[in-house]
Length: 319
Image (tube, rainbow, N blue to C red; front, side, top):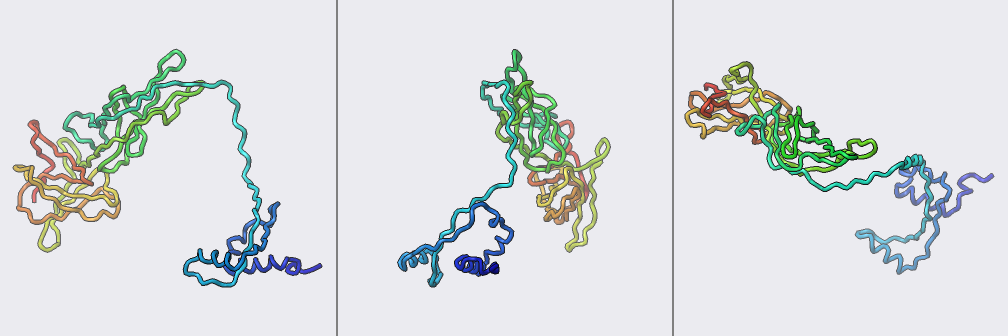
């Protein structure tokens, strides 16, 4: 019996050597081409010198070398994937004809009322039109399921009408701009089952404001003032916020004089490298006295406590 190399056609040995030279053997090392029904065949193509020169002109910045051309045959590759199971037969078709009434969000506000900011654990109210989808099921008109997706988290409304939805904010949202979208399901099938992705509103924006943590009533705010070791001397204001500040968010401290709250002084906490609920600010260049404290996270400001006539009175620190 001839050795394996002697049994291989000379042309195959030359092609294999050429493939190995250009580094194609390793990627094909685990291929199952040898097990295929259709063999791989290489057939020389008789190109004239003019045709070869035109072919080499395609390869820019490559010098022409003496070469020959081969044509490889098509390889029949059979998949090892299992055939899918046949679909179940349709016993009875259901045909639905519904008017396309897209839900529209016109306003998002705090459920506490006008003038109140949206803060963590707030209830929010979405106002608009077509916020609840109704469809005929048999001889009845049934309302489909409505969800509100806030910041990518689906929430079930506490109450819903065609023009107003009340829903709680989900946990885990970051302070700053957030999105809200109404998604309505449809009742399809026999018996009727809820199917998501029926009608969807456009994405609306809301601003989640941070709060400075506090305890008790009247509230005692978690704010401390210490001496900094920098030069020139400065005060260090440390406070805790909710929700925690995420990595990459911008945190600013805003100090306002109670007599002229329209005038403010801003101080940065610097780059936020890890998520934290504790922020420290170096405060310098201010005259001694009392200041209202407000924190801004990605532009969203914490609320100030106000008295009966609307004047801000807390939280306050002394420098």
